[in-house]
Image (cartoon, rainbow, N blue to C red; front, top):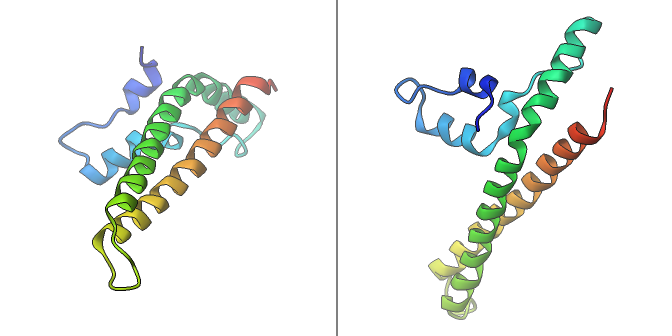
Length: 125
């Protein structure tokens, strides 16, 4: 079930570009508020909002794990199809290198999202 706060922030398909929609489907932090700004009541409200929104972080973790797994599979497939690099630069070598970058970014995203999720679940202020 999607929280009500996500429903109110959900982009309209006609008013959002595909790049913004892709970014919002992979990066959850556009839904969170800055809990370090404002007075005590505003910070408490932002912290409460962020703890409520932490319910959606496992969904983003699964997405990034899937992206990392697909990138890893692409690395192995491209490596198996690549020829000897000393003779010429093969397209499969470039695909494997690009997939390696995507896999490294996915690992970083999983670590950041996982830390944020654990922090929001375990730290009660």
